[in-house]
Amino acid sequence: MTREPTADEMTDIDALTRRRALTAAGGAALAGLAGCTALDVATGEPAEFTAGTATVADAALDESGYELNEVTENTQTREFDVAGSTREVRVTSTIAEYDKAVELFGERYQAAVFAVLTTPRVEVLGQAFNPVGELDDEERARLIVDRYESVSNLERSSEYTTDILGTDARVVVYTADGEIKGTGVSVELEFHVAEAVEAGADYVVPLAAYPAAFGDGENVRRMLNGIEHEPASEDD
Image 1 (cartoon, rainbow, N blue to C red):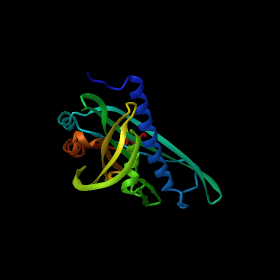
Image 2 (cartoon, one colour):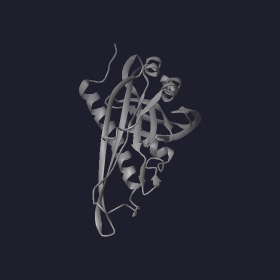
Image 3 (cartoon, rainbow, N blue to C red):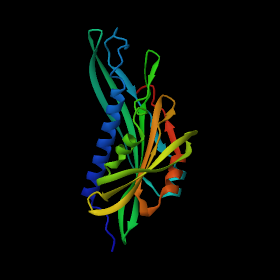
């Protein structure tokens, strides 16, 4: 007999994952601006930076078995003083989330997740800031750790290089102990954390996590290789 988390449990999982990952990413983006005092204050208008969207191609999804859960966006706003004037900076990031059910101990759980975070390349007076590039590998791993409960013993396991948006990107693999959220099932987890990749005016950060016993590393690579990026429209 199989058991999948209830609709209420999955709603809580999805909301918590999006909220924490996006808040962390948006906060990092604003932190990258904290030391900047070179903003143009002539107009007093808010400085807005909006990301495009990175998703996984249908062909890669068909091969890997993942399905799109949701694409969401998050806007973080911060006010600070520049030359005696108060300026507002708005940074909008997007995240595409994919899920996959895995079978463990004779039961099925929606326990594998692949997410692609896209955050804008903040540029002020010709000076570029990499809001997510300042996060180290473990800090990026933390963006997806909250999909699980009681995560401990996060350890770097290995790394590899693979194609992401035409770039040979480094991906760090971590292992950890944890529980599948809402189930009480304890498992060893594996996290794949890619470095930030430039995509036009954006930075793209792919993240994946699954129970280690499921051995989904090859499918994660397919997903990484299948990422596509659509820039924000000029109207955004």
